[in-house]
Amino acid sequence: MSHPHTQIPDDVVIGEIRQLLDDAADPSIAGWCRRFRHSSAWMKLDRWLPLLEQARGGGQFDMPPQPDDIAPIEDILDRRKTEFARRKTAWDAAFLTAVDIKIDGPFAICHLGDPHLDDPGTDIAGLEHDLKVIRDTPGMIAANVGDVTNNWGGRLARLHGEQTTTVAESWRLAEWFFDQCKWLYFVMGNHDMWSGDGSPLLWIAKARNCTMSKSQVRLNLICPNGVEIRVNARHDFTGHSQWNVVHAPAKAAQLGFKDHILTCGHKHVSGYGVTVDPATGLVSHCLMVEGYKVCDEYAHAKGFPRHHIAPYAVTVIDPAAQHQNSLIQVYHDLELAADFLTWLRKKQKAA
Image 1 (spheres, rainbow, N blue to C red):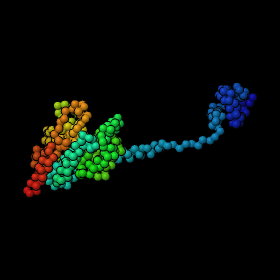
Image 2: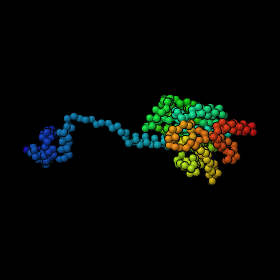
Image 3: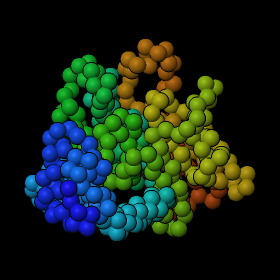
């Protein structure tokens, strides 16, 4: 039995605790005192716990402290501030992008609908013809509202088996498509977005200095004479009406931004409507462009009626127009639009 004022060495205490542990006895101060007839007067809990830990094995080796793989809070905060500043700059710039138009006089934008380049039901010859007309017409610019390829993914990946074009060939078609014209804008469609942030389309567009957005492109076209034309393009606007094909872009024009041209695709239907802002008199041209997927198995299976005018819509813009009703003319015949644009440009050049 130890004297109440006798300090028992740590190694002795640790050895005795290990005996308790080996015998599955009570490894508490009270259990230790009963077993070895010690006095508990000098043994305090803050000394006992470290000795107990060593007896359980902590004293058999020294474990160095492990480095923390989580960044310090100061680094996390700095990174978050930098990331937000970068994101906010890009966000604000995309709200309305100023574009200096270098074309003197009238010009036109051909807003192409969903291409679905690799789909067996796509009129690729018709698309090729239309791209050539755009290239060969001075003052005409191309634009696209998305769904460049089918890009089947997830549960729809099985549909690759219903087309003869391979995935690799689909991306080659996409590159060919981007190379055909100088594009004013590209909006990624739902099919394009299935590739996520790593979509090859983003890299293809960047290499060609083409404006491409995941959801919306909104441009302020500044003409040489100072006239400004705002274009608001999405793959689709919110809203639907069985009575009005262009309900979604018309709703956006009336309840949202007062832009001159609002265009979208996605639903594979054609439509055109006009709204007027009563406060300013600004005329908004609301366009639904069908695209080039003529033989649409999904639409056929669902019984969707085909609202076909043209796979595109052409907006002929005359910056010298004196009135809103002659500022923008909409055509659903590409060659007729090209002829009108050519005539209008010659007329103004001769004046």
